[in-house]
Picture 1 (cartoon, rainbow, N blue to C red):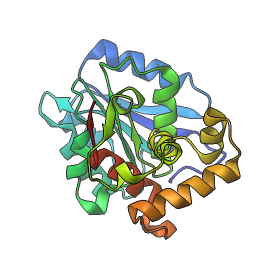
Picture 2 (cartoon, one colour):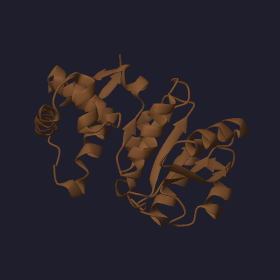
Picture 3 (cartoon, rainbow, N blue to C red):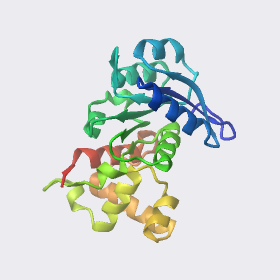
Picture 4 (spheres, rainbow, N blue to C red):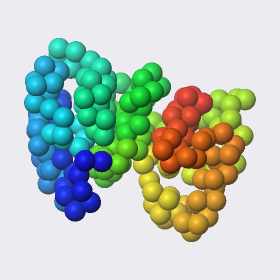
Length: 222
Protein backbone atom coordinates (compact mmCIF):
# COMPACT_ATOMS: atom_id res chain seq x y z
CA UNK A 1 0.00 0.00 0.00
CA UNK A 2 1.09 3.62 0.44
CA UNK A 3 3.56 3.10 3.29
CA UNK A 4 7.03 1.76 2.56
CA UNK A 5 7.92 -1.42 4.48
CA UNK A 6 10.06 0.51 6.98
CA UNK A 7 7.47 3.22 7.57
CA UNK A 8 4.67 2.97 10.13
CA UNK A 9 1.21 2.20 8.81
CA UNK A 10 -0.73 5.46 9.03
CA UNK A 11 -4.18 4.89 10.53
CA UNK A 12 -7.23 7.14 10.66
CA UNK A 13 -10.08 6.44 13.09
CA UNK A 14 -13.66 7.50 12.33
CA UNK A 15 -15.86 6.74 15.36
CA UNK A 16 -18.61 8.91 16.80
CA UNK A 17 -18.39 7.68 20.42
CA UNK A 18 -15.65 9.84 22.00
CA UNK A 19 -14.53 7.34 24.65
CA UNK A 20 -14.32 4.45 22.20
CA UNK A 21 -12.56 6.67 19.67
CA UNK A 22 -9.97 7.71 22.26
CA UNK A 23 -9.44 4.08 23.28
CA UNK A 24 -8.87 3.03 19.67
CA UNK A 25 -6.56 5.97 19.08
CA UNK A 26 -4.40 5.16 22.12
CA UNK A 27 -4.32 1.42 21.42
CA UNK A 28 -3.30 1.80 17.80
CA UNK A 29 -0.86 4.66 18.38
CA UNK A 30 0.90 2.64 21.09
CA UNK A 31 1.39 -0.30 18.71
CA UNK A 32 4.84 -0.52 17.10
CA UNK A 33 4.60 -0.02 13.36
CA UNK A 34 1.30 1.88 13.51
CA UNK A 35 0.69 5.63 13.78
CA UNK A 36 -2.68 7.33 14.15
CA UNK A 37 -2.75 10.38 11.89
CA UNK A 38 -6.39 11.42 12.34
CA UNK A 39 -9.33 10.70 14.63
CA UNK A 40 -12.74 12.07 13.70
CA UNK A 41 -16.37 11.45 14.58
CA UNK A 42 -18.40 12.17 11.47
CA UNK A 43 -18.64 11.62 7.72
CA UNK A 44 -18.32 15.35 7.10
CA UNK A 45 -15.14 15.74 9.14
CA UNK A 46 -13.58 12.54 7.76
CA UNK A 47 -14.27 13.59 4.17
CA UNK A 48 -12.54 16.91 4.84
CA UNK A 49 -9.55 15.55 6.77
CA UNK A 50 -8.79 12.35 4.86
CA UNK A 51 -7.40 13.73 1.66
CA UNK A 52 -5.81 11.20 -0.74
CA UNK A 53 -2.55 9.90 0.73
CA UNK A 54 -3.25 11.10 4.28
CA UNK A 55 -3.61 7.56 5.67
CA UNK A 56 -2.93 3.95 4.69
CA UNK A 57 -5.89 2.47 6.60
CA UNK A 58 -9.12 3.95 7.91
CA UNK A 59 -10.95 2.29 10.82
CA UNK A 60 -14.61 3.16 10.31
CA UNK A 61 -17.71 2.85 12.46
CA UNK A 62 -20.56 1.65 10.23
CA UNK A 63 -23.13 3.90 11.93
CA UNK A 64 -22.15 7.57 12.00
CA UNK A 65 -24.37 10.50 13.04
CA UNK A 66 -24.38 12.18 9.64
CA UNK A 67 -24.14 9.23 7.28
CA UNK A 68 -23.13 5.67 6.59
CA UNK A 69 -19.59 4.43 7.22
CA UNK A 70 -19.69 1.99 4.32
CA UNK A 71 -20.62 4.72 1.85
CA UNK A 72 -17.85 6.86 3.33
CA UNK A 73 -15.40 4.00 2.87
CA UNK A 74 -16.38 3.62 -0.78
CA UNK A 75 -15.93 7.37 -1.33
CA UNK A 76 -12.52 7.41 0.35
CA UNK A 77 -11.37 4.29 -1.51
CA UNK A 78 -12.33 5.75 -4.88
CA UNK A 79 -10.34 8.86 -4.01
CA UNK A 80 -7.40 6.72 -2.86
CA UNK A 81 -7.50 3.23 -4.46
CA UNK A 82 -4.82 1.77 -2.15
CA UNK A 83 -6.59 2.78 1.09
CA UNK A 84 -7.37 -0.13 3.43
CA UNK A 85 -10.77 0.02 5.13
CA UNK A 86 -11.65 -1.73 8.41
CA UNK A 87 -15.31 -1.57 9.44
CA UNK A 88 -16.34 -1.70 13.10
CA UNK A 89 -19.99 -2.33 13.85
CA UNK A 90 -22.28 -2.94 16.78
CA UNK A 91 -24.19 -5.32 14.50
CA UNK A 92 -23.16 -8.84 13.46
CA UNK A 93 -23.56 -8.11 9.76
CA UNK A 94 -20.42 -9.16 7.91
CA UNK A 95 -22.51 -9.82 4.80
CA UNK A 96 -22.45 -6.05 4.25
CA UNK A 97 -19.11 -6.69 2.54
CA UNK A 98 -20.85 -8.74 -0.15
CA UNK A 99 -22.63 -5.61 -1.39
CA UNK A 100 -19.47 -3.59 -1.98
CA UNK A 101 -18.89 -2.38 -5.54
CA UNK A 102 -16.44 -4.71 -7.27
CA UNK A 103 -13.93 -1.94 -8.00
CA UNK A 104 -13.37 -1.29 -4.28
CA UNK A 105 -13.95 -4.76 -2.75
CA UNK A 106 -10.34 -5.62 -1.85
CA UNK A 107 -8.67 -4.45 1.35
CA UNK A 108 -11.80 -4.27 3.53
CA UNK A 109 -12.20 -5.88 6.91
CA UNK A 110 -15.09 -6.31 9.33
CA UNK A 111 -14.94 -6.61 13.11
CA UNK A 112 -17.90 -6.62 15.48
CA UNK A 113 -17.82 -4.39 18.54
CA UNK A 114 -19.91 -7.00 20.36
CA UNK A 115 -17.74 -10.07 19.77
CA UNK A 116 -15.05 -9.21 22.35
CA UNK A 117 -12.49 -8.57 19.62
CA UNK A 118 -9.01 -8.58 21.13
CA UNK A 119 -6.31 -5.98 20.61
CA UNK A 120 -4.30 -8.61 18.72
CA UNK A 121 -7.17 -9.24 16.29
CA UNK A 122 -7.76 -5.52 15.76
CA UNK A 123 -4.10 -4.78 15.09
CA UNK A 124 -3.84 -7.79 12.78
CA UNK A 125 -6.89 -6.61 10.85
CA UNK A 126 -5.39 -3.13 10.44
CA UNK A 127 -2.13 -4.58 9.14
CA UNK A 128 -4.00 -6.90 6.75
CA UNK A 129 -6.12 -4.03 5.40
CA UNK A 130 -2.91 -2.07 4.78
CA UNK A 131 -1.75 -4.73 2.30
CA UNK A 132 -5.09 -5.14 0.55
CA UNK A 133 -6.42 -8.24 2.33
CA UNK A 134 -9.96 -8.88 3.56
CA UNK A 135 -10.29 -9.80 7.24
CA UNK A 136 -13.45 -11.17 8.84
CA UNK A 137 -14.28 -11.28 12.55
CA UNK A 138 -12.93 -14.57 14.01
CA UNK A 139 -15.66 -14.83 16.65
CA UNK A 140 -18.40 -14.43 14.04
CA UNK A 141 -16.73 -16.92 11.68
CA UNK A 142 -16.65 -19.48 14.48
CA UNK A 143 -20.45 -19.36 14.57
CA UNK A 144 -20.82 -19.99 10.83
CA UNK A 145 -21.10 -23.24 8.86
CA UNK A 146 -21.15 -23.99 5.10
CA UNK A 147 -24.53 -23.88 3.39
CA UNK A 148 -25.71 -27.23 2.02
CA UNK A 149 -24.83 -27.69 -1.64
CA UNK A 150 -22.34 -24.82 -1.71
CA UNK A 151 -18.81 -25.09 -3.07
CA UNK A 152 -17.50 -24.35 0.42
CA UNK A 153 -19.38 -27.40 1.73
CA UNK A 154 -17.27 -29.58 -0.60
CA UNK A 155 -14.01 -28.60 1.08
CA UNK A 156 -12.30 -31.09 3.37
CA UNK A 157 -12.26 -30.25 7.07
CA UNK A 158 -8.62 -29.18 6.80
CA UNK A 159 -9.25 -27.03 3.73
CA UNK A 160 -12.16 -25.36 5.52
CA UNK A 161 -9.96 -24.66 8.55
CA UNK A 162 -7.34 -23.11 6.27
CA UNK A 163 -9.98 -21.00 4.50
CA UNK A 164 -11.42 -19.74 7.79
CA UNK A 165 -7.98 -18.76 9.12
CA UNK A 166 -7.11 -17.13 5.80
CA UNK A 167 -10.31 -15.10 6.12
CA UNK A 168 -9.21 -14.04 9.61
CA UNK A 169 -6.17 -12.44 7.97
CA UNK A 170 -3.51 -14.99 8.91
CA UNK A 171 -0.55 -15.52 6.60
CA UNK A 172 0.36 -19.03 5.46
CA UNK A 173 3.01 -19.08 8.19
CA UNK A 174 0.43 -18.01 10.76
CA UNK A 175 -2.04 -20.64 9.57
CA UNK A 176 0.66 -23.30 9.77
CA UNK A 177 1.54 -22.29 13.33
CA UNK A 178 -2.12 -22.35 14.37
CA UNK A 179 -2.76 -25.78 12.81
CA UNK A 180 0.62 -27.33 13.59
CA UNK A 181 1.52 -28.01 9.96
CA UNK A 182 4.26 -26.74 7.64
CA UNK A 183 3.88 -23.64 5.53
CA UNK A 184 4.28 -25.83 2.43
CA UNK A 185 1.35 -27.98 3.58
CA UNK A 186 -0.71 -24.84 4.08
CA UNK A 187 0.03 -23.72 0.52
CA UNK A 188 -0.99 -27.14 -0.79
CA UNK A 189 -4.30 -26.87 1.07
CA UNK A 190 -4.77 -23.31 -0.21
CA UNK A 191 -4.20 -24.43 -3.80
CA UNK A 192 -6.67 -27.31 -3.41
CA UNK A 193 -9.20 -24.99 -1.80
CA UNK A 194 -8.86 -22.47 -4.65
CA UNK A 195 -9.43 -25.26 -7.18
CA UNK A 196 -12.58 -26.50 -5.42
CA UNK A 197 -13.99 -22.98 -5.17
CA UNK A 198 -12.98 -22.01 -8.70
CA UNK A 199 -10.92 -19.06 -7.47
CA UNK A 200 -8.82 -17.23 -10.07
CA UNK A 201 -5.27 -17.49 -8.70
CA UNK A 202 -3.86 -14.60 -10.72
CA UNK A 203 -2.29 -12.36 -8.02
CA UNK A 204 -3.82 -9.30 -9.66
CA UNK A 205 -7.26 -10.79 -8.92
CA UNK A 206 -6.63 -10.92 -5.14
CA UNK A 207 -7.40 -14.65 -4.69
CA UNK A 208 -7.25 -14.49 -0.89
CA UNK A 209 -9.85 -11.72 -0.91
CA UNK A 210 -12.03 -13.70 -3.32
CA UNK A 211 -11.76 -16.78 -1.10
CA UNK A 212 -12.68 -14.83 2.05
CA UNK A 213 -15.72 -13.31 0.35
CA UNK A 214 -16.77 -16.73 -0.97
CA UNK A 215 -16.62 -18.06 2.59
CA UNK A 216 -18.83 -15.20 3.70
CA UNK A 217 -21.31 -15.76 0.86
CA UNK A 218 -21.62 -19.53 1.30
CA UNK A 219 -21.86 -19.88 5.08
CA UNK A 220 -24.62 -19.14 7.54
CA UNK A 221 -25.20 -19.13 11.31
CA UNK A 222 -24.93 -22.51 12.99
